Picture (cartoon, rainbow, N blue to C red):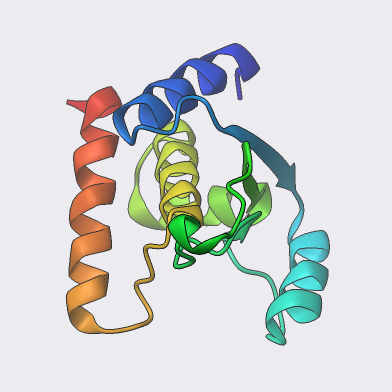
Amino acid sequence: MDEQKIKVKVKRVLEDLDCLEKELSILFTSDEYIAELNQRYRGKEGPTDVLAFPMQDPMQDVANGFPETAMLGDVAISVDTALRDADDLKEPLERTIDRLLIHGILHLLGYDHEKSSVDSMLMTKEEERLLNFFWM
């Protein structure tokens, strides 16, 4: 993974989503550590591909007195799971990482594919649109 290349891609995604002035933390980690995070923060056993931790509830209304923060949040990606996903999907690891980064960023902005099939469809469509920046 090329750190500079990732920064350029994330900057482009944040710019498109009108979040360029926001800070974002990205952690690339192992299945073991992401499983700990998954248990601690979501109460779910085992590793997952990506976790997102927003610094502000995206559903809060800033106009009602909730301070807006410059920090968008944190995205954690399991490289172990990404490697398996890339192999299963027969796609380059770089594309899998790009997809997971976009997925995590969308979660930070309030997208939630687990709410309903409509929300899942909207999130998938936005992921594909953003991923096409780099892979068309």
